[in-house]
Length: 489
Image 1 (cartoon, one colour):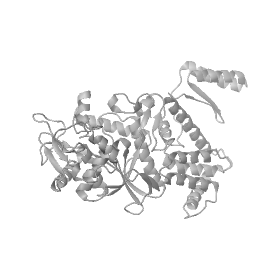
Image 2: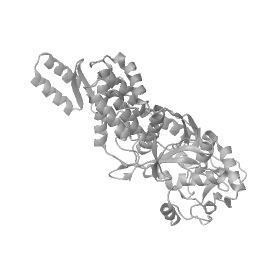
Image 3: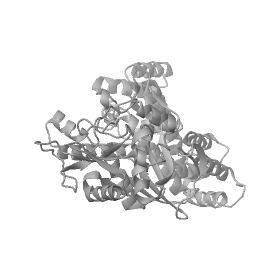
Image 4: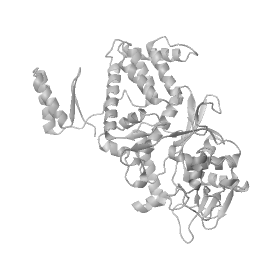
């Protein structure tokens, strides 16, 4: 598999530390509010990476953190902890806020069909590990104390500081582009290892440390937890593009200063979801779209997953309601094709699928071999797309081509789509969800249309179909009779 490494700014062949295994660390949510659909694009992409690696035969261990302390509202390590801010906003304890929004996040995560990480670790469960990392940095001379503020990492002591983001990004930070002035810092880019609790006050989340009562800096958690579960050097580190210039840059500095080893061999970043009106989607604006809101509007959450599959992860994705409507229609058409194949509506019986699937995989796994059947050719193309920096749009196109190819035996098409859905995660073969009952006046129109078709009054049938569509109900004639569903949105 070739992947684009942000660190080297080029595609590289993925060469893991252990043959056949991949250790992946993915930055998780800060659980002070709901995750918006821009956040979820990154999590969907990471899920696709894990699914693709496993599909291609790798053993994968994915670790994801939950930030429930230490993430301040400013990149300057100033301002209020987002957890304390959330507690004040809702009149709850910071611990209750963390529990509520962690549960809400995983509800959305599951709704989007993202597989559970192998390890989920909360920052508040790893305070000791973060303190130990800070002590190592202190012993090696990388830290200093700002009285009344905290313990800071001296970025001037780390010659490679900023290598992930690049010199231009770091110069922008030094000029105040993203970090406010802090007179106590030796360098504008220095960052907190440990923050002191305010004198005379008491935080809801604070711990004793060798430097005094307080809480860890945000960047510390990812280094401490990644090394705890994946070792001092890890294979892949994932996150959103907003983490490159500061969060991931600081993770590299503190981790490599502590161990003297590379922290991660491959750094991968998903681009932003943007909207035409406001640009980058952000919780700080107070207005953002959530998975739950899409569901309330009548969308299948996997329509949004499908929407994300249409654009490569290294390109910005513009969100529009019209685009989501089109994605919902595309997903339903692909599902309908899969269901018809599964129902045996073709020239090869579906029970042959297991034999065909095994044969396809055998043919595609031959080194330097040329697939000798159409289904094997589709599977080979699908694998090639995954291996080319996770080219999911091309992989999805392979699935569509196979679904439409009526010249290919139905059993082979069915087998291929089942294989492809292991990566795409669209639940192509799930039974349609039961619709809520229609209002009596709409159901009367549906029944009247069924009667018109039975009487072969096709003109009246078409008129009723158009009337129902105008009222938000779509009617389709199938071999099993008339079926209806509400329009999404």
